[in-house]
Image: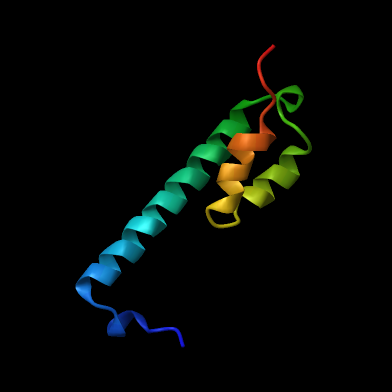
Length: 72
């Protein structure tokens, strides 16, 4: 059963906050990168990648791995 925020210890709260910050940083970086690239530099639809990036850690990491085309 999931614990409520009030039931977490100080260290557990710190870990949750740190992981949340990492997740938001990854997503913000991926969205910023996506916004600055042309359609030709993206594998697939920019709209689809924008939605995928919103999925936890998996989305931004997937975008950085498979969403961007390699420079020639």
